Image: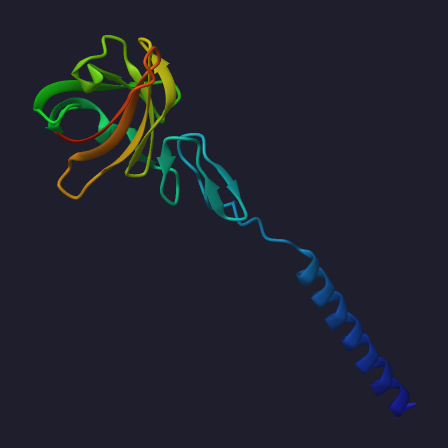
Length: 167
């Protein structure tokens, strides 16, 4: 009888231990319980997925503000002459979109661009009978380095330009 009591005790302890292990393994912890994503970010698996225009571990960094303002533009003009003029960059919806006024010192309508991290992208678009596209970046000197092309839709002549924008 003594042997069977120990045997039953061991079996009972093993069963309780097994049940405890099953409960522990079957419970999933919510990795997003303690994570709060800002600016409309969505948490999945403990990681924030940010909407356009925001980044950082908690979507708390807005990319657009550093691109906004009135910039003095310097660099070679479209036919090699020196150029210096001011462009204005202001925000638009969604939060990663910007509009550039006085683009290339020749456009009277704004050119659309999108920002992400330290990059700015000007998608192909037609503005005032010219096709514009380009890309650039916000550099360590707080300047924008921009490379773009403009194609006249009537003549199909393309110019390629590199500019530096200073605040």
